[in-house]
Structure formats: C-alpha cells, structure tokens
Image 1: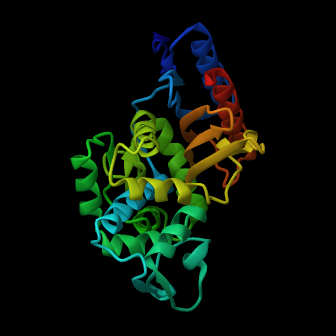
Image 2: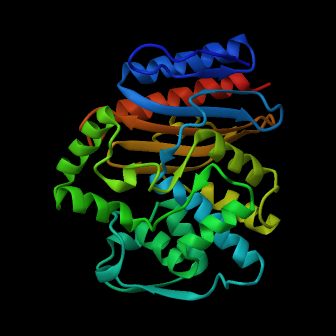
Length: 315
C-alpha cells in the first residue's frame, strides 16, 4: 500500500491504494474534490478481494443521517432476538417530533406506525421523526454500547437526530442560513460553534469504520443473520440516488445505501453489487467550503468517485 504524505499549511489528503492503478484512482478522486472546495474522506473496498482505494480513511466525521444505519442494525438485532416486536405500534405526534422534510417529520397530524415501518421510513426517505421514535425504544446509550460490544470502535452514537437541529438553533436561532455560514466559517478555524459538527460530541465515524461495518453486514459477520439481511433489504429501498449511486445506474447493478446531510455535510455509504459478482462497499464523507444548501456539482463528484472506484476495483 502506498501513501501521499501531508504537506503545506493545508493538509493534503493521505491517499491509499493496493497497487499503482488504485493509488492513481484515489489521488484523482481527492484532486477532483479539492478542486470543488470539498474536504473529507473516501474509501472503496472490494468485499471479495479485499483490495481498496481512498484517502483520509480514519478521519472522524459527524455522520448526520448516516447514523441511522447503525441504529437500524441494533433495532433489527433486538427484533431478531425476540426482544422487540416489528408490529408494535408507535404513535408519533408532529407537535413533539423531530425536524425534517420527509416522512413523519413532515406530517401535520399524529400517526401510528409499526416499528418495522419506522425502519423503512428511516432508511428509505431518511425520516428523522421515525429515527427518533426508534431511539425512544432503543436509547442512544444502548445503541452505542451494542456497537462497542460488536467491536465497532470507530463509530460513536451520542445523540438523537433532532439534537443536531437543537444545537443549530442554539447557535444561530432559527436562521438556517446563519447556521450554514457558521459551519463553513468554523471549517477554516477547526473550532465548531455548533456542537453536533464536532466529532468529539456528534454521532461520528470514519470512512474506514463505516466500510468495515458494511463489510460485516454484507458478510453476516455482525448481529443476527436475520438482522443483517433485513438491513441490506432496507438500504436497497433508499429513494435518494443523486450521490454515490448517480453514476451506477444500470440494470446489471444494485445499489444499497444511506445518505446523510446537515448544513455543509453531504455523505453517503453503501454497497454496489453487479450481476458479474463484483461487490464494492463505499463511504464518502464530505464537508463543503461554500454557503449553499444545494450543491449538485459536489454530488456529481461523489458519483464520479463511486463509478471510478467501482471500475478500478472490479475483477
């Protein structure tokens, strides 16, 4: 494995690749992201050969909605153990639920939904209210402890989803534009004003830890096999395909993923599986240096990274 060492006042990404071509591919992705003003980390791993490429693999990052994947795994493991009934009804009241624009978060009236369907809403449309309803059944501390017991030391769970918005309001009032401005400004200083943008206080993880989690889920090497199988199915239901999946749309490919978005963070993790048998797990965790709620060029760059990594790693 080769690496490019940091240099200069602004640290250069440390790139890895298991041969010269894979290292070249990692360096190309890092350069494309830097040209767009994107910092972060990327890792792609062939689940069968073990070959990989990426950069800054172990940098901890606030996860935003990517945290819903480990939450789902713990809930599904409890279901598989018979400790939680997937048909159990849960009532979510919008007056007391979590901020969000999809699913139950956008409802105006109370709704009663089964636990199994809360999982579907959480992973398919990234429903924050569904996620926090599940946290009401399986508390944050329990999720974090279960991850520790499974050896997932590179992923930490510290708060419910709505806490991200509570911290943003605490720093910027109800001015989301100001919160975004603070996030971008603080990116330069390294001193987050918004607590949930600090990896020491946020739900956090690294690209390496997240890809290892995916590897274990796809290999049925963590939790109960019924839990991992259902997590794979639910991640295949995600409706958002504008990031890693945008250049992997083909009848011969299947993408199962989960995005995460908060202020200047745009993430996605997932696995692409080809009819040929190739399987590649990926994690892309990004921080933008611009005050823009929408950044299709960044999302397209994430998609290009996924395409190039898949082509480089398939055998």
